[in-house]
Image (tube, rainbow, N blue to C red; front, top):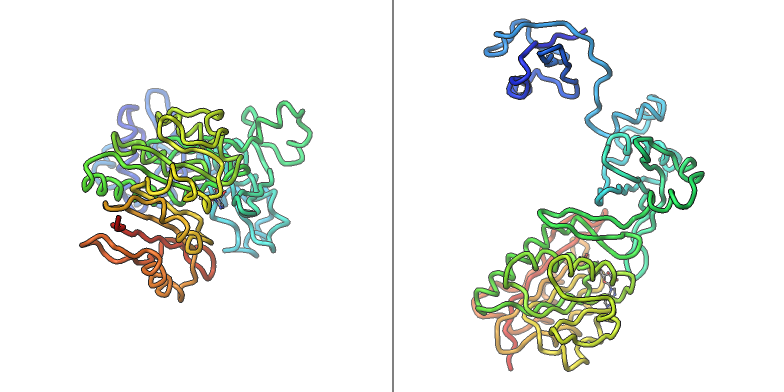
Length: 396
Ligand SMILES: C[S@@+](CC[C@H](N)C(=O)[O-])C[C@H]1O[C@@H](n2cnc3c(N)ncnc32)[C@H](O)[C@@H]1O
């Protein structure tokens, strides 16, 4: 039995907030109904005499059912013995990547045998998730993910991978679809991590790209022609296109053909007039946009594209530095331009990389800071995902 406060229904939220504001409050218990009143749980350890204004309300003892876990791991005991859970304490995979209505997680080798149970605990906790996958990491040049389906929710029932396999194909296929809509700030991005690269972790980078682009537009006084030669499904443009008159012509390409339907969807969603047929022609469109499958290293050979862009985004983190010299020719000459790039580097090489970039990117814009590689997020045990921003003015 637990002590509860009996409050009129319309006071429920304010009294609940008040209870929660005290450090003795404990989360995870349910507010119960009691006729015209609500019973607000006082938790495991309330003071004997309640403070103002809580002491104005009648108290009532009531039964609380099981506490609702606050984290996925709270559900793990439903699937694995407590002893095993505590044996591996600290090793269970707390990190996960929600992408729209699917959820991806990685698990260390030594806990692999519990992957199914972990997936079930995660889907039980994440009530809006349709399917949970083990993420075996990004593979190949296209950086696409190998995903193993482990649990799914069908008509409010949670299914194991074995149960999923027994479903007819017509039910299983849509249930395990990895194409999904991801919400970033106030916009939606269509992704499919099995077909094309996408990382939610870069969303704040996209916001900074917009901020820097706005600065450049102020200098130039007109919309910007923007090149994103490794654009994937086009998340950078999704953000840039939110701002009226920020984007002029775009160059959006990727070497992965499977990224194209997603890219076209995301561009159309933000008002760019393009169809899959247009991009198959592999030509500059009458609109002035260039969208298609392309090896970025060959772009400057195209006289329609060379020297045409105010902004260049370079997001091929393992090869950014080697590709960059082949891309500078895309930038306009004789006016301020901006290059933003991302790269992966061990900590002790970051300062050398800054020097290297200063050589690759000469002609800084007068009054702008020199190019510097800055750490952003830890990439793995030894390396960082870094970012640089270069303001240039290339001579005519
Ligand atoms: C790290 S992802 C970045 C994708 C996107 N910019 C984003 O932020 O979501 C790198 C992308 O570069 C593409 N890629 C790899 N080599 C390429 C090349 N030589 N030319 C064009 N794209 C390439 C991959 O297919 C992948 O989509």
